[in-house]
Image (cartoon, rainbow, N blue to C red):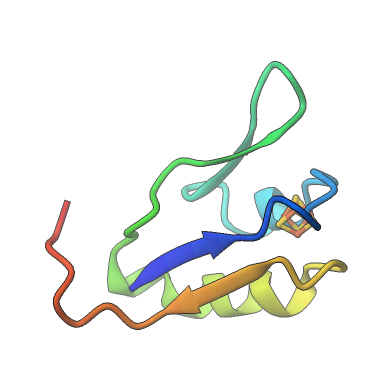
Length: 70
Ligand code: SF4
């Protein structure tokens, strides 16, 4: 699974940071960082929740069956 954020529409309001701080963070510049672009499967539920809560619908979860664990 890969996490893709559309930074053209993300407004860095931090909603996703509250839901999945393991994956999303607001840097010192107050812009969203994706800490784990290929997060472990056990975070999928929380990531789907974050994607559903994002007011800009900027988060997409992509199945990546060929993706290597990082
Ligand atoms: S919830 Fe959506 S708009 Fe807000 S910081 Fe996360 S990706 Fe960006």
